[in-house]
Amino acid sequence: MAVDNDTALVLMQNRKRIYRQRVNKMSRYDIQQVCENGHKITGCYTKAPEDRAEFCKKCGAKTIIACPYCHKKIPGDELRGDWRGIWNPVNSLDVPCYCTSCGKPYPWTQKKIATAIQIFEEFGELDVKEKKTIKKDIENIAKDVPEAELSARRIKRIWDKYGLLAYEAIMEFASRTAAKILKGP
Image 1 (cartoon, rainbow, N blue to C red):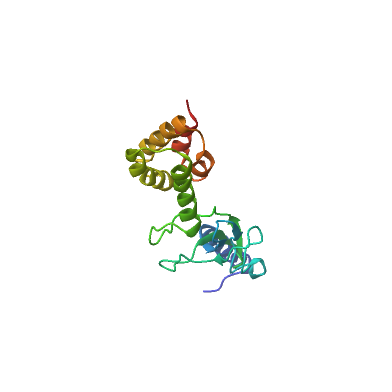
Image 2: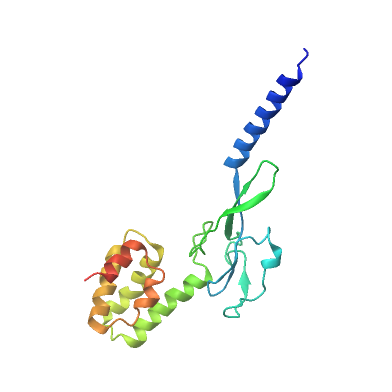
């Protein structure tokens, strides 16, 4: 079956168009490099090796690219391929708090939770009941679980009683819902 030049050109253009549509729907994620204190070094660890750093330029902490527990890579920037097969960053992801593979907190999340607990324990004159619940309440807020709203109300009651000592430490990782409760009257 012979095909004339015009038909061949149309077929080739259609193939390119279909290929572009398929590629545009395809995306993948690079690897994110983060310091142990939560500062993002790069979201394109493999695509832009020149941005890598062994230590953080903000705080000097060692950097990681994988979960310390399960060793799964930290998801980085979303890359999308063009019709030529070149992958470019299209969406930069925030530094995650928890590993999506094992569910454990990253080192920076552990430090934030520990700092908030320590602030309450050292500067808040907590009673026995409050001391028992404060750690779990802070973890609930950090995880944004259904119990976070109740936990936020408990913590707000505590700091209304003793002052706003842990406000910034908790607000840094509080969900929007918990943050509204904590900021509210």
